[in-house]
Image 1 (spheres, rainbow, N blue to C red):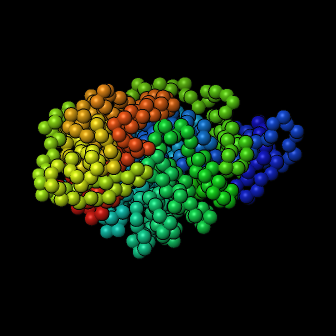
Image 2: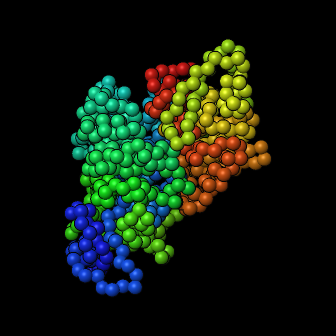
Image 3: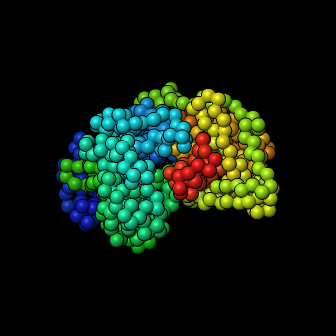
Length: 553
């Protein structure tokens, strides 16, 4: 039996009172109101922990049990995770790997079944594996699977694609929610998308989209990740519809993740003047209700899962995190409780799917002559969407006066799953790489090799280093090369989260030397390959107009 005293933040009843939690065998057996005795230090506030309602753990480059160690530092007690990235590389084996790793931490993981592996497939792109209707049906029957993850193929939903609808029906038969992904979808199309059984969306980027989503009965997951940041425009929904809003990071880069997580969104919302209870409902409660989980809301019979904070202002600090009665973080101590005795299991097992061979400069030649019309991918810092620039050139656009000097570079996507595959090359602007190249095996969602560089020599060096490492991230400058190996599916490293974050910071500082000033250049580059987000993207097979979903070449 254990007692925890403090100012209890009862989110269910929306009241704060002095009292104590009585805990037995990891469960709250009594909540007592009582006076708090005089103390040398102010009593802490005891409140439900934060939840990330949609995250791809692979984007942190950490395996799940090491992701958990960082998350609890920020007061996060659970995540609803879509193993879409590793699913594209390894299929069901990848999902099982993530679940197995998650079991090694005292944390709440709920994994979904990726609904679109590959995201589009067919003749558009090549993934390492396919998760079909039969796989989805089998996975949905499992107790360790909680939902059908983001249905990115919204055109398939709207046109009644049989395979898409069959996956949704599989989730419904097992009583599990279906997540959405439908950027820019409003009006009757939004209603039709929701009517198919899809109940959330994290891709809303305007208030109009968010309201349209809620009007159709779908919950809006407000995203504030490393590359995509939608809080500023969507935050009014917290006050308008607090029961229909959740928070997520989606893709959170390791150097951002070690600084903060959902706690940063909560602080920002409180600083913006939103009601404490509305904010906490979005951060702590709505996801539990939506996904039918009881991870703890400080009620009798709940798991003894909560956080303590020093105050409930926008400047609060997480002092401790307790999960199922076990303290997994304390700001004044180093705890071992969130470290498995068999912590090295993942380091002995590096599942991967990588057969690409080195390339030469001849493999990435792009023949452009005067008078040609070229299509340029226009990338923007802080956005996953691109603009489609169509330019008639008087020469080579890499040096053409249409753009400032060095504004346009080559982008290369190289299939890593099929022996003998050839790279495909296009043009990109917005990265401003003046002399050098960057490359990575994190390329949403099929995770082929992607590279952007100022000339062919740098590009070849960068791509071939990725091939040599069997996955990772690389930056090449005129003087040197810096890299991060990612041997687990080409997506994750078997390192501690803080070490990954430090290496990430080092490599991003090196990227600035070649001229790129983007906050998260690798994440932005990774989304240059995702054909379900407009307006123009490059896959391992085609340059695609993703507004009309047509092949440019």
